[in-house]
Figure 1 (tube, rainbow, N blue to C red):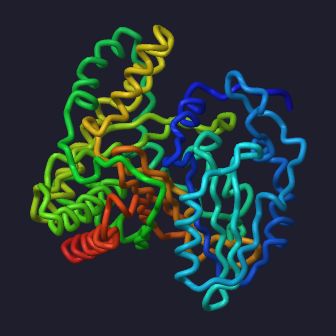
Figure 2: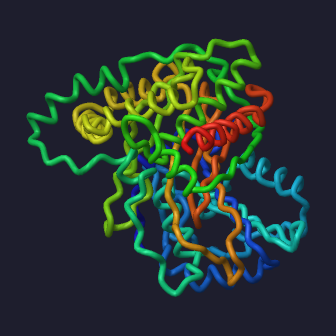
Length: 426
């Protein structure tokens, strides 16, 4: 392959990395069986040709950021044996993985293999730089490199209501340029003109990381959504409502105001069958209903708001706006990006990526858990990454423990909200 410049979006993401903010995301894969690092290397080596970007590094020549082949690529440098661990050791390994930057002199990914775990399980902790893959692209890579359907044929995948269309991607807009332009001022006021209040999450973050997970049934979230009053809620609506409740529990413990918090919800713009692309998404903002006391009222408020943003095609309009601005002026684009990342616009990022629906295996061992973790940012000291696979949904929470004490309170609040909504939905 020849030298390839990073896309403008990938280069922007690469530049966000700093001394205390890492640029990678992380997938934690837990399987029912003992598998060695050598077995993972052999398995991955057979599939790497389908993922050539995993054998490319940043061009060390400097200048505009570009990918180039790594002449000394070796899986021994990327798939690391961490030996046997207990559950506490695995937790520490994941935290360390989120704290440790990927080395720039090699392809920007790494896998730590922990085996055996308690109960004869194994875990794979896979870091991959966000400049290499967004959530949808990383899930495609996971399916190519690791996951295999247990059944001979996976059931036909229903369009997920959590990450590609609803709420993340509205139907494709074929409006004229004039109609799109007419929408921009209203969209900017709705998405970027409203202000989030100053919150305890608005902190300059340090290098330490803490993680927590909440695991639940995908069918249960669907059932809750279908039983919602007035209108059906999506899985992502239920998830956002649960995150709101978790934050409220934590804020109540702090004695902080429980209102005025906004979530940035990434919206995938990947098209089925398109050529592989690292980052292709937009976003919408959702005011989290922390001021509502009732779980069903919280869910109803979220559903109404996400439905409005989808009906008005806010995510695609924002995508068009930022692309148009980039063509007009680099300086103006930098200012627009800076504003869109400001804590005055949103409080935390909550993403949701769908994975394969049917039972999965890795190296012939059944998949037990799949978790996703995404990096925090300055003045956004909490990040929530939601992923679904094999009938389960995982909420992955990542935070700076020096900015957010008792991350477990947020996780427990999410769990309790799902239980409360489940009992109310019959």
